[in-house]
Length: 348
Ligand code: CP3
Image (cartoon, rainbow, N blue to C red; front, top):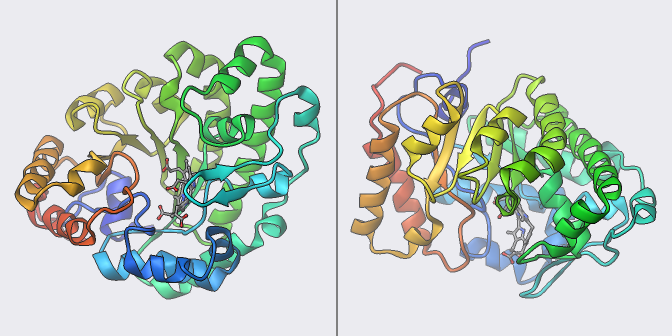
């Protein structure tokens, strides 16, 4: 089947007319349209109402002209049917009311059927596929490690001490938790693909907290099951993490059609570590979007020069858009990427 559209073509390392660009967290509080909806509803209320989730997903597509849409949801939604509890306290990030700390806690996790327990996510995907037409829709989930870190810590963490203590002192409990999470997240991702997601991203945002040896022992088999099962459907799978310079080869071995690169190493060096047989996504520092336009342009062009027109580069930030980012600068980056890509003009 012919792959059309520059995002899906680049993900498959096919030639494109210009480098595709989208942003992690492209929907969110930096956008006035989003804040207007958030004034009246909580984050979870938006997720629970498929029409609203679809509307928020479309906001950046309309405002920025990005080459892909990412479903509006959150990596922690599966924690709700698992029975861990989820709340977003104002200004404090996620809180999981019943954190998992023991083998008995792992065994008490409830079975999850994504088609019923997370039916609102699937419904948002179906609405979006009908509305998006030519813009591809990215579904997503958290990777087992990053989701486990929230479920064990009970919220965000700086040093992941409870998570690592479980790994090092109660490995049976850790492996049982990862086993459960990889099964639930795999089923969740497959349900999103059946509902119509045309690509998926697996967010392992905090995996950079681990050494390569710990990654390989405690995380890789579970990420591998999730990534490779999703890849077997034939759609592109983006494997994303931050702080991953030393983990890239092991992450690539776990799977992914496209590997995320943060800003901590130059794009071509990251791509070299990974090998030419994968596509890459990245790697602008989100903080650069607060700089004046000439500085932004210098750095966008630098990344495009390092990618050098090779097929398989999707432009993105190295992590999500930060709160208070000027919308005009985000829009300017989209236009710069489209204008200054070094790709040979090839028919789509
Ligand atoms: O990218 C998108 O536009 C799609 C929507 C999306 C959200 N969360 C909505 C959201 C995506 C892809 C996510 C993923 C997510 N959620 C990750 C992985 C990506 C990353 O940034 O590393 C993580 C770690 C989470 C967990 C999470 N959700 C945290 C830590 C927070 C609080 C941080 C904050 O910015 O306040 C959230 C809340 C959240 N999820 C917001 C959005 C738009 C914040 C805005 C709001 O409260 O309205």
